[in-house]
Structure formats: structure tokens, C-alpha cells
Length: 261
Length: 379
Image 1 (cartoon, rainbow over the protein chains, first blue to last red):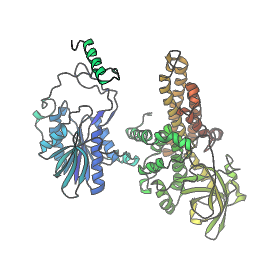
Image 2: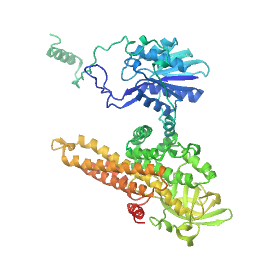
Image 3: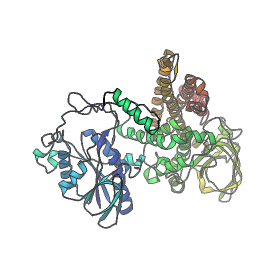
Image 4: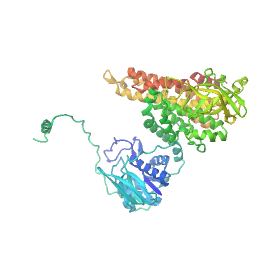
């Protein structure tokens, strides 16, 4: 089985600052990590490999320094790593990203694709399903558990807010992984050593079969109109009262704020 | 000349730091309080290959360099000096001499399981009347057919009762003095090999420090490590490497205390402002941070020297001398900056100050390090 896992390098912070002029994230000085949902997806792939045997490839599209998360994935045990990097691919929204990644994954070859549910710097949850769409394969999102019958069928416990679905799918298919579906393994010292001895395949725009009009900024229909940090809510006031008294209290508070008359 | 860690070494650091924070730190207090050997940490370190970092892959290790190993001891010791010394004694004092002096059969039989973490290692040189004066060991190994019969007592042995494989030093020819000492590999459970007193210590309280007793303990001749009469050289050479491990432990303790104190002085208020706003705090912390950085450079330099130079005794001695005295100074001043709270078990600097002291004593006291350094200077 060939498993390809999509991983993304993301800034490690909940306090990302936004450039007020361009409306994009300021990444300077913020440490980078492997996106947590992607790391869980990689762990799921490694567990399938440990159990059934597989070749696990990891791919990322990003700046050259995204090599670091690929090395980390290799140090955790991935077999091969691909870096898709090119100025022409820059500024891509989710659809342009999916187009480029789908083309690269086709070139690598796959039976199963695992992506994280979403990246903590964008929270769109679109890239995984869009890759499946581009490759015309089934997609199962929000995986909490992945099982394999050892032959050609994947069984996924898909999480909803209030229930699960157990979904069977024939390979090839794509699964998006939830960050809490497992606890990703640590790297090992020897794994790190090997990771730096392994060559990472670097591909540019010319290495993948895509239309120039469908990649990068040009190929991105989504434009960010405005980005701004959310205003922080105050701590609020806590008051304990009986039902009737509470209603009176709320009404007077709303009146005070001129929300009602 | 480059003082930056390579991307590869930064990744080791990231791994060890994450592991130490998540897996080791939560148990540091209870390890100290109960004085129980942190077996859980050792099992996890085995699972992730930490028990054979600088051992070749074909010998069951991870195939990394000494600097990677030093980064591991440093990060572990930042949060738990007990776990740091368990790894250091195992790797530097047991794996390393077998790797360097062992026959291929000994490497296969003993080093492989040690490096994989299936077995834990220890090193036993010190005796009641042979501390710094290590060449006056009384333990005797007398040949008898295809064996040696071991009689004697070893004390202060790190990983004492928890280890499985021991490198032991004993007199095979008393008339030859230091040249009459030989080294042996002894397995736990060998008849005649038992444990005596468990030491109750000031610091590193979770490390298993025991007395080893040998009474007519029969060791097969093939378990002699290196040549007959070369034991003292093996011990001294091994301790050169061990000192780098202890230097890394001391460095980690100092860094842990400093980080903890930086956090504390930003929170603790007196006279209406945080301690961090007082110039005394600022100047003390500046001095401590500078010492820590200097210690780090010496420790990393010694680690690199071990892999690249023929001899590294002076580098190792300087690193251990400076890092251990730094650990003592930094932890003492960190307790002072914490005031009364620093003297209580509520804050980790109290434990760190107790843990720091041993780094000035074991694997050669600071005085011994000064002898080594001046010896090479004045020869």
C-alpha cells in the first residue's frame, strides 16, 4: 500500500499577528511546527504501515524552509518526502493549493491519501476534500479512527458533533484526520540522523502537470478582503440568583446598556 | 568557527526538550520525594532509542554523535537531574567502555542489549577506601581455572540495584599497583553478587545508589574487558567521557533553575513591583545567564572533541569543572532570588540546588578536574 500524507508547516501560536496593510499573517519570529491535525494523520499512516506494511510518503507545498517539517516527518518514520516549492505556486488559496498538491500526489502514486482536517493558520478544512475531488476519489472527513481490512477496504469512524458514522470505502480514497485521533509518536535520535541522510525530492511548477491559470495567486478565486484580530471579550460578571430575580437582573442590565427600553 | 547548532542538532534538541517537558517533568517532584527509581522514564527512553544515542547502529544504537547525546542529558537534567544521571551513567560509563574496549563477542552479547535499552548499565570503581584514590581498590579477582573469583565491595554505584550489566574494576595483581587492576563485565544475578546499603542522598534522590557486594563471585574469563592489568586506564578513559555527561547534567540543572527563576521574578511582587524590576535581580540574572552560556560552550566543545580528537581529557575536565560549579552557583543564587519560597519544596529550585551539588563530586571532584587540567598544563 502506498500512503501519501499531506503536511503543512504552520506558525506555533494562537496569537498570530496580522499585517494591517496586506491582511496576511506575519510569520517572522514565530516558531514553526507541523500542523497538529497533519501530525495525527502521519501517525495514523505510520500505524497502518506498522501493522500492514506500506510505503509512507509525505508531501508539503510551501517555502523552502518547509523542508524542516518534512525532516521531522522522516524522523518520525516516513519513508519518502516531497517538497513542492515554486514562486509560481505562491499566494495560492485552497483550490489552487489543492490543484498543485493533487497533481504532485498523482505523480508520486497512491492508494490512500491522508491529510489533516484543517491547518491551525487557516482553519478552512478545504484542501483535503478538494484534493479528493481533483483526483476523483472518495473523501472521508473528520476521521477519529481508521481501520484497514488488509486488502482493499478502509473503515473510518467519522465524527460529527453528536454522533459517529462508520464509513467503508474502497481504496484509493482520501481521509482527513482529526488532531485528537491519536498521540503522535516522538521522533527517535536515529530517526533524526536518518532524516538528514535522506534526500528530499524537491519539485517546482515544471515538475507537475498543471495549468498556469489554476495555480498560485492567478489560480485563486478567493481574495482576502480584510483580516483583523478578534476583539477580546472581557471576563464578564458572574451573578447567582433565583429564576425570577435573574430575569429582572438581566432586563435591568439590558436596559442599562440601552439594548432594550 | 560556528557556534550555532546544525539543523540536525536543533532537531535533536527539539525532540529531547519536548520529551523532557511532557514525559519527565511531571514526575520530577515525586521522584525526588519518594526516592524511587523512575522506571517509567527509562522504559520510555528505551522505546524512543535514547539508551544508545552515541552507539553505532550495527551495535544496536542510534548512530548519533556525542553532541546529540549531550543534548539529551542536558534537556533531561533541566527538568529532572535524576533521569539525566541514569542516562549518563548507562551510556558513558557502561556502553562506552564496552564499545571502546570490548571484544566483538562482548559487544554482541552486552553492548547490543544495552544500546537498545533492553538492559541497563552501571560502572563500579569506587570503594570505601578508594574514592579519589581510585588505584587503591581492594576488590580482588583471583584466577581459578577458566574463571576469576571476585571478592570485595563497591560503593556509591549509580543505577546500582536497577542495572543488569556492570563494568567492575578489581585487582588481579596487587603487587603491580594501578597496573594490577583489570576490568570485568558482570551480570546481575551472578551467584555471589549481591546488594548492600542503599544510599540516602541530598539530591538526585531517584537514582539508585547502592553498595555492591562480591563474595566468591565467579566470573568467566571471557568477561574480562580489555587486557589484564589495563583496568585503571580503561577506568580513567571511561571517566573522561563520563565527565562530559555529568557536565551536560550540570548545565541542564543550571539552565532549568535559571528558566524557573526568570519566570518567578516576573510574577513575584514586593514593594509594589515585580522582582524583575529591581536592579539586583537584573544584575544577578545577567551574571548567571552569562555563566550558563560559557558553560554550554565548554560542554559542547568537549562533546565535539570526544568525536574528533585523539584525547579530550582536558576539555572534559574543564567542561565538568566549570559546568558543575556553575550549576552550584546558579542554583544557590536562584534560591536566593526566590527568598523564603526558594527554601521550600513548593519551588523546584530547592530540589535543583540539592541536585547540583553532586556534579561537583562524582566522576572526579572539582579538585580532581583541577589536577587533570593543571597536569596537562604543566607536563
